[in-house]
Image (cartoon, rainbow, N blue to C red; front, side, top):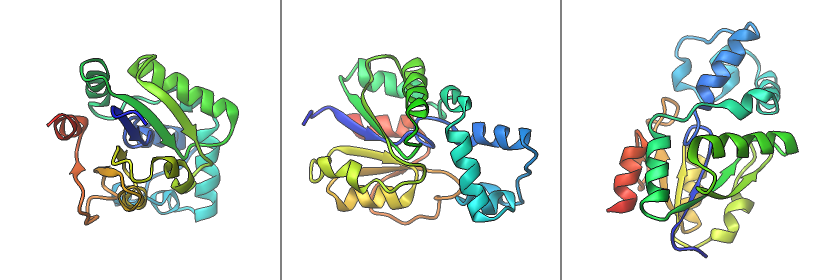
Length: 193
């Protein structure tokens, strides 16, 4: 187990999935509901049923668009600093899709934004899948685990990881014993202090 390894989610942590998905949904004729920024459930955000929301997420995650997501906030700058100046490498654990091409596009997107050597691994789980099995090899390792979904951050903490939650409208009221951050500058300060 590498001491300088950081476990990290992709969407909502490294990549601005919400922004790209919003554009894609608008192009397909869907309109956000009032208060959408405080909802995690896509069905509620767009006033559609939950199953249709899940299907649309899968379609988007397996489309060519998934290879061109922009970085989230200041992620590019601080991930590169952690890697190049402090020797950290990252393992991305993402509930994107098990589609091989979607996985390749995710790896390409991360490499393009963060460099070819920052990620030692990318684990792509089924769309919306739980992360228990992917985190199991790291149980009780006390590695950093950066997430935006409270359930996954909580899971990491219970598995003996150091969870950090990236704040969004949908999770800003989550009470937890681990840090909640607004950007990668704050993550950088926590990890390097």
